[in-house]
Length: 154
Image (cartoon, rainbow, N blue to C red):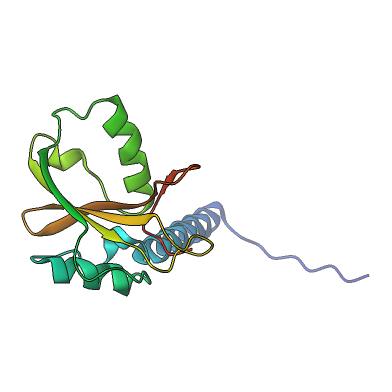
């Protein structure tokens, strides 16, 4: 049997614990930042034209029609009502947040998606823009068993 002992004074032990805690916090923050970096809301979100919007969606992996099938301008409620607050949860999961844009005029550009796995048609990508910035978006299946999902390519 081998026994090893070391004398460690309380001040030095506290210093080691503090350094270990700081390293652990830094590691957790680095992992969280790396995971969020790949989210659509953390990409370059400037889009002045419909072509910019289509290019943004293609950069995320979506194959879309070159021109929007629909463009709509509306004002987000201020404060966001219950349905928008629920929708904003979807936005938060992908790195966007609609809250700062409450009360502002927003433009929604909708594109046909051509490559959603398992769904050859009736899939739409919506991008929400305010002042030339993409502030949100979703993938929408408007078929019989419709769904709304994030812009994250499956």
